[in-house]
Image (cartoon, rainbow, N blue to C red; front, side, top):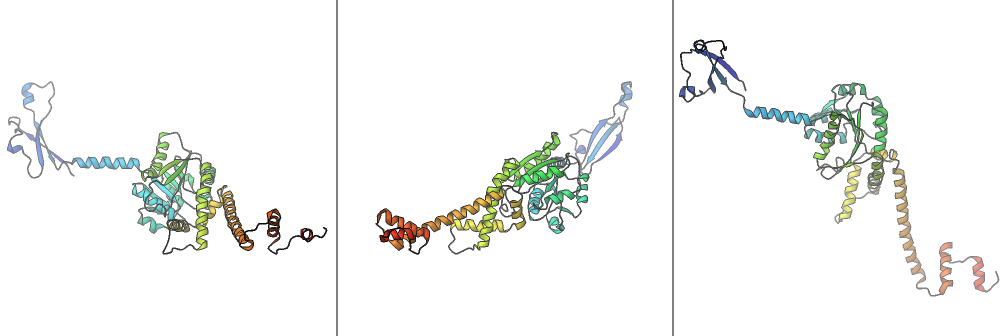
Length: 382
């Protein structure tokens, strides 16, 4: 809207036009005229003041109130938004970028693979060179690489081009490992937030509501802007309905080894088994099929990273193997009892006959007892 003001002098001898006069009403050009007397110095006499010139203001196309409201709304959204750089723009990075952009945050990305087309489709600016990305001065840098490549990425990253109050966040599935490498390679001026969204592109494709989001504020500065920046980032997941769980990295890994690693292990076992849908699927069977679908989409590199970088994973794998063996023994033990009953029927011979059957089971199904016991039963001396 353009606003124009015109000043026109009027003769003091002419009385000003009353506001109620039709001559004062604004014409079709939306102009308004108001009399404005020119202030006179106190030293002037009354007759001199009467001879002063009055001014008239004309306003054309004045700005409307909604312009001001839109500016306030823009400033409010700007104060709530973050500039987030994603390192590693694969499936998971793109999955998170959609939510960030949807909430009005500015998202930039870098990856070894050229994802410029995918980034453009999401409204994300892609940088093939990490130096160029750092010169954009993001407020938050999100480490979204694979577990096995994360340390190499940090070793070669140009931290010196970032602001010293940058917040560094990871979303790796193993937290003690992520915490260790970030504290090792990041400058001490950087804030560190370890997080793990306990869902992925498949399990969170419809909604994040109720899904757990684990975080640990490893190193957050005491200044108000640093604390606010951290809370703004966490608020992204809170607004999506996630169940926010603050937990230490060590405790996370203990729980994740029993839940995440075992889940991936069982999903891959069933995938190797060749689980297929049938016309008479039960609810439990559908659950197993969904498990295979959720885990088969993840790379083996992720599964190997869960095993290699979580010190609790080996124990869980051994327990899983022991559980399979225990079930196998229980099944075959029950089957052995059934076979024995079919072979010998309802035996009624007291302790001697019971002992004889036990010996047969120990020494095989040949039916022959040890020589010493055979001699005793025949009446011959031992």
